[in-house]
Image 1: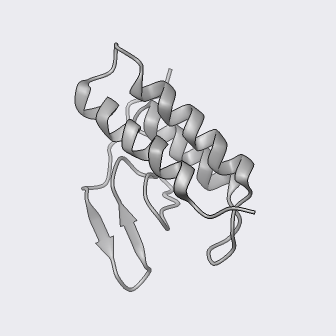
Image 2 (image 1 turned 120 degrees about the horizontal axis):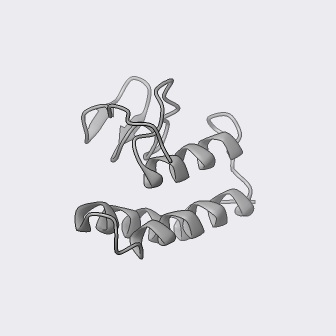
Length: 101
């Protein structure tokens, strides 16, 4: 079970840091929040962040594949709200298009 946590306001763009947050505290390029994940999708994004190398480097395909699998599981979970499932589907599809090595 994921502890209840507050999310940053989304969407959030910080042009100086080159970050774009689409969900929770972790989903979006350049976001490595000190806050806990707010739900299963945010947890999947946190796992991807942990797996990914520092900014400017290309993650392994295994990192992106894990994000795809975890986000897709959230998108198919009928117990989750439809809005979360829709966002998770977007993240899962996007994970397949991310560059990797």
